[in-house]
Image (cartoon, rainbow, N blue to C red; front, side, top):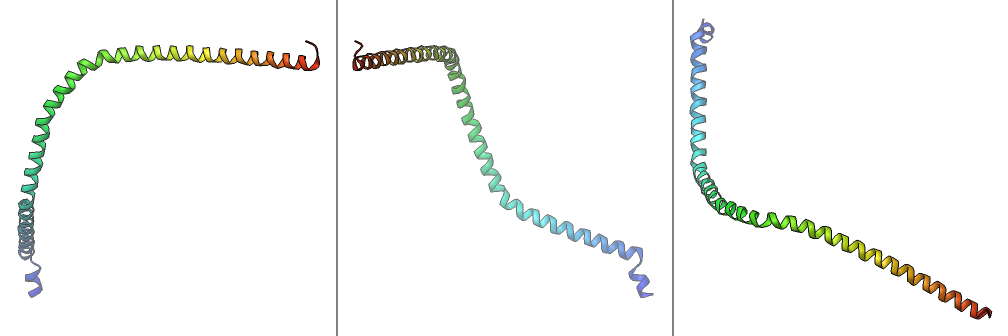
Length: 121
């Protein structure tokens, strides 16, 4: 009889409702405590975001102005780089030919010295 009264549908539903209310109150209190610490952080983040957003417009303008200046220079830079490469290749080929001619002259000098030592000259 006592067990039937405890296990009745109304009693179990009442216990579940009281548990749900207790959990709801506990969750609300927890989030209220969190909200108190979150408000200053949220305000600081909003302030920083606005500061960066305001500074961004100036930087966008600077980037736009510099892009106008830099774009023609990119074309020039490419041409100058190609010209530099051509000059480097010419310089390298000149150095190679100079080294080859020096080598030939050295070889001729050795041959003459060898001939003098052998008495052919």
